[in-house]
Length: 160
Image 1 (tube, rainbow, N blue to C red):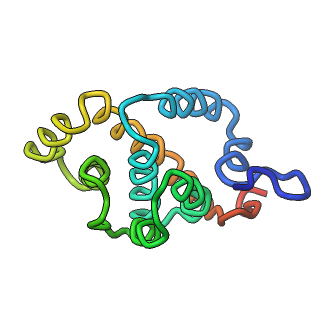
Image 2 (image 1 turned 45 degrees about the vertical axis):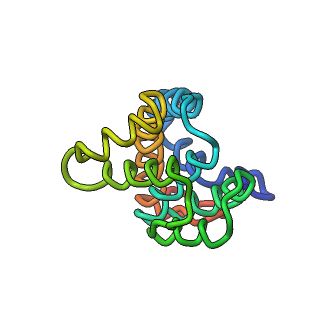
């Protein structure tokens, strides 16, 4: 996916974060650490990201992660459903649990006990924790991208 356009302007979250360097550095550090968490397959990681992107209609995240999800083995119908905020039934049990935890974290209240228990039993503590921090990561980026209406693959205009 495009990080800089042909003119050299940053697109996506990087273009926004340039306007807030004091916040960009610690956010970037958090993002780097969250991306290194173990416990989830790359497919499940992309399911979580598309779940958040689809729930909040984050254009750039959906644009950037559709090809990464394809590379991770998700099919076009699965990517389309997740991007539309739906839950494809043909995901693996791990992926369904990751999507359900991501959805629960964006709803009011705590993750329901039975979902928490099932997710920790199947994904392990590391997998559950990875879902939590990937959700935090993409919620932060999603809010940033949506606040400034950052389009998919084009430079932003609202902060120019």
